[in-house]
Structure formats: structure tokens, C-alpha cells
Amino acid sequence: MRSGRFKKGMAENMRSLNASISFDKRLYREDIEASKVWARGLSRLGFISAAELDEICSGLDKVAAEIESGSFSFSEELEDIHMNVEARLSELIAEAGAKLHTGRSRNDQVATDFRLYLKRAAGEAAEAVGRLMKAVAAAAETCQDVVIPAYTHLQRAQPVSFAHHLLAYVEMLDRDRRRFLWAAEQADSCPLGSGACVGNQFSVDRDKLREELGFGSLTMNSLDAVSDRDFACDFLYAASMLMVHLSRFSEDIILWMTSEFGFARLDDAVTSGSSMLPQKKNPDACELARGKTGRVVGHLIGLLTCLKGLPLSYNKDLQEDKEGVFDTHDTVLGILGVFTTMVETMEIDRARTSGSLEGGYLEALGVADYLTRKGVPFREAHDLSGRCVRRAEELEVSLPSLALEEYQSIHPGFEADLFEAISIEGSLADKDVVGGPAPSQVASQVERWKGNLG
Image 1: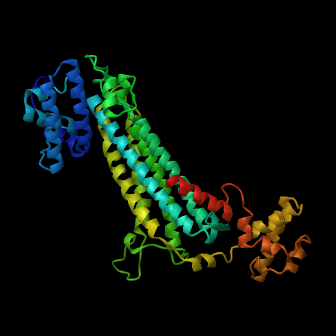
Image 2: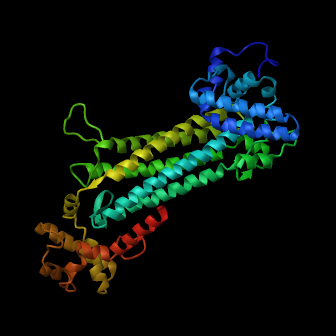
Image 3: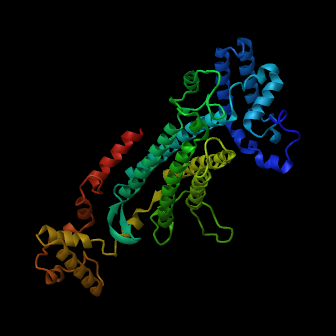
């Protein structure tokens, strides 16, 4: 690239700064696939013969084999995966290799490679999210009989089935899965043939290139095609939301595993010990998921910041688009795999969950609703229920243990059927609406997810 225009070589520190081969070598499969398709396009235009096309495709296969075997020697001086592949191809097949870049720029080449990579990466992430969803839904199915407190402000609020709590995360994960699928769609446009910035000068059949590369559509503006990285931001946003959800899930599991809660036990395979304290069994998988959330969100912010001031079209700033995406891809797949194992092997302590329902006056809203059904305006019923809670506190008893006479001294509308209405079973059965925790609704949601997830 420098032999014609430049009088001297690049400074060593500038070469190190400029080179991207240390990380973009990861795109070798996509680069070789797109180069084969480009070679076929040049052959159709008559720029290379059928024999040269065979040489190029065979040579590219040899380059791929060398990379996969570990025998390929990557050169920082050649800057990136594109020039490394092309240089080695030319060594293998001489003159035919020098024709491959006819009418093509590294700008449309890297945009094509990166889109191919992200289509695959987003699809893999969506599949991994689906596997976790299946594990969480299966865990919910096995504990439909378990009831725990639901919390607001991390204070006990109302009884809820453990299955309903777990299914909340299935809903979150489903949105994450759909975001990854959408990100894959956003990457599914072929920019090849856009040249450096203003298109191809040899009337290459771009739609044929699209078809052979498996893209669903063509980019429609060459300036945008070589400089667009929205699809990478879409992937990073999907990953960031997933990690935020996994971080929230992690916090719940960390609490559940404490001695104070004791709701859940994690398998030895996904926990760690202490270098000092023999009794410790630490939820490191959850803590790592929570910690790596900042890392993934940081990659999104980094790319958005990189893009915010770029003029059209291509700028070398865009070299900063890949490392964060690659790291995010690895991080997401790693965390999802461990999380799936963790959920599949998690055990629920039914004795502890049952005991957790004592105290906290979880029945207070049920008391107010009981009066509301008898015609008492809700705000008045709310006040009366609060007075019942205060009286129970004074007597140091729970609401189900507070005597009927005490209730009736606060309001004459209370009758003996109050206690059935404010029981755990009554409280859950009372929420028989779509999206509610009534046993019939939870069972219906479990079956729905079993059907959707296979």
C-alpha cells in the first residue's frame, strides 16, 4: 500500500498504533468467504479467468487452513486481516492473487466482514439466551408450590409464588432474545461493492454478491455503507440490556443464598471457596455476571462516543469498533453458559421459603381488600388496615393471629371469613388475572413457555 506514494516506512510506534491485526484476525473466516464471492464477481466481469478464479479460491482455502492450524504468520506491518490474507494469497498463487482487490476497498471489505460476523454473533447470543430461558422456565415448573414474599423497596410486600418470580426473568430474557434477533436483522445488509466511499467503478453485480453471501438486502448508499456501525451498536445494546437483566437476577440469587434468606442453594460446580474461611461457599458466578455488566455497558458507550463526531464517510476511528464487540460476544456467551448451568442445578429450600412468610404483615392489603369488597371506600379501608397492623404490632402477633374481636373493634364489617381471605392461598387465588400469580395463571404461563421454548 505504501510502495508508490511514500518515500519511507512507517515509524515503529505508529505502526503499532495503526495495526489492528492483533484483534481483527478474528474475522478471517468472514474475510475469506467474502473474498471468494468477490473473486467470482470479478470473474463474471472478465477481470480474472476461470483458471485464476480456481487458483484464488484454492489459495484462500489454504490460507484458512494455515490460520486454523496455527501455522500462519500474522504481520503487524501488514496492518489488518485483509492485507495479511491478501499478501499470503499472493505468495501462494503469485499474479492471480494481486488481481483480487480490483474494484474493492478495505472500507467495504471490513464493513462486509463485520456484518457477517455480527449476524452470526447475534444469532449465537439469541440461541444461548433461549437455552437459559428454558432452564429458568423448567425451574419455575418445579416450584409452583413454593411461596415467598414479593418485595418493593426490598421490604416485604405481598406473598408471591417463587415460580412467578422466576418467570419474571423469563419475560426479560425473551425481550433480550428478540433484541439480539433484531440486531442480526440490522446487520443483514450487504455493503460489498460500495468501494472506498462512492461505489464500484466496474458495474459489479452487487445483488449477486448479496445473494452469495447470504445477506437479506443491499445497502443503498455507498457513503453510509462504509461508515455505518449502527448494527454494532444494536448488538452492544442488546448485550447491555441482557447483562443488566442478568445482574438483577444475580442480585436476587445472591440474596437468596445468604444465611439470612436461605431460599436457594447453588451447586458446587458454580460456586467458589475462600482462601481463609473454610465454611464459605461463594456465588462467584453471580458476582462476575454483575461485575461484567459494567464492562459490556462500557463497550456500548465507547462505540457510541467514537461515532458521535465522525464526518462521512470512512475514518480510521472506526477501527475502534471491533474489540468491544468481540469482548462482549465472548463475555455474553460465557456468562449465559454458566448461568444456565447454575439455574439447572439450583435447589430451593422449601422449609426456609415457607418460614419467610411469617412476619412483615404481608396480609395487610388483603385486609383492606376484604373491606373494599364490603363497600368500604379503598382509602378508608387502607386506613383501617393500617390500624389493624398497628394493633397487631402492639400485641406482637401476626395479622392471621390477631383475634377477630380486635378486628371488629376497629371496624364491624370484619367477619370470620376474613382469615380465609387473607391466607396465603387466598391471597394468591385472589390475583387471578393475566400476568398475576394465581396458581392457575402461573401454571398457564409455565405451559406457554414450555410450548414456546420446545
